[in-house]
Image (cartoon, rainbow, N blue to C red):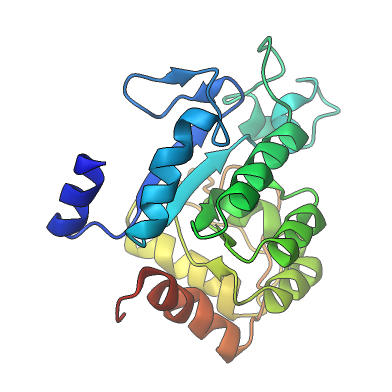
Length: 237
């Protein structure tokens, strides 16, 4: 509790990134094996974050492909193989991760939770949408999943427009000008069927799929880029 307050006094405005890929909060030092976000031992910390108005950013699970068989039937194999979870014993599946996150958010209604990367629900955004509707204190960022959601532009556009008060812009990628240009192109334009390569002619955004622009509205872009974060973090952006 003292460390949280010290960090707040030094300028911190949130906690994270916490991370749980099935065996516990492994991003901690030391890792909290077997301890998930709704564990009773986390209650005091989560309540302190509410009192200090410090949102919690948490990574839960991975996209569905990471749990599936690693062969030519796996459409996400090009990225899933590196971070595969199909060969891990005794881990939570993606649905169980959402249950723990939802339980924590319901148990601590005054604490703001921000699920990283669409809560990794990129193959079924409706599951995340249902949670965003039911839990006023649950939010999500859109970082590091552009290559997944930019392949289904109409569906993703509708989802983001519907939940534009609960989502935040993010990247979680190498900080370079062309990376930002690509994310802006995806969010702001209606460009179709394009690929992105870095200076070494290596395809970025992880997959073999083409990307498409979402063409989000100006009001939604304003909320994603700044307005939502300004409201949740109680600062002016």
